[in-house]
Every structure is written in structure tokens, then in C-alpha cells.
Length: 165
Image (cartoon, rainbow, N blue to C red; front, top):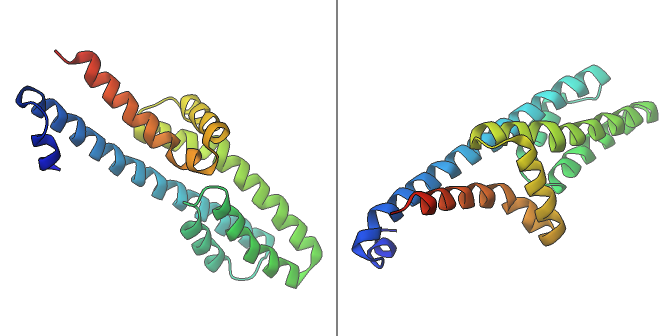
């Protein structure tokens, strides 16, 4: 990293190091927020599957925690074993699990993730949601993965450029 900074003019090196330092901590906060989202969803999955009566709620919650960081595919991959376990008990339980996981996906995408990411990145949740929707329309899955970190990095770079002398 220092080699890249050494390529810059001497008068800009401190500013570039400052920007890189802030971006590094931004990623730390971003991943901390992702872990918190995974933990919240896993807790909800444990509580919901326990209430519904699905076998192995701890295993389902662990799967939800591990797969939650994969946008769109993760919640679906966590849903499949819960559905199969519920269907092995009864079709009514399987329908309850379908409804439960649809509610989880809605809450995660439109409430939990924008709120948590907004808090850890100090950005309004509506901006997070709009950035994800715009990136999804423009770049698909890759856009969704990179929307929030890219938005935060651009905010930092613009702030440093604006205050740069």
C-alpha cells in the first residue's frame, strides 16, 4: 500500500494515506454491520422456527447466519432446508415456513439492512436502500454487493476532495 502512495506527489501523500485509512475503517464497520445483520436474522430464524415447531431450529439458525451474507441467494439457500424439514412434518407447517421466510426476507431487505448499514456507515437508511435499488437495476447482483461500500467510499473521497487544499 505504501508503494502506491509513494507514486503520488509528496504534497498529496498524507491526504491519500488519510483517505485510505478512513476507507479501511469503513470496511471494518461494513463487515461488522454485516455480521450484526447475520446475527439478527439468525435469531429471528431460531425464534420463528421454534415457535412454528420445525425440527432443528438451532441448525436452521446457524445456516441462516452463515448464508445471510450472500445477497438474494443466501436467504433462499437457508429457506430450502427449513422448508424440507417442515414439509417432512406436515404441509401446513411448510406453508407457515414459506410465509415466515417471506417476512424475514422483506424485513431484512427493507428494514434491517438499511437501518444497520445506515448506523454503522453513518448514512441515512433511505440512501442505502436507494443505492442498492439503483445498483441492482444498473449492475444486477454485483451492483447489490458493491452498492453500499461504493457509496460510502465515494462519500469519503468526495469529502476529502472538497476539503483538500
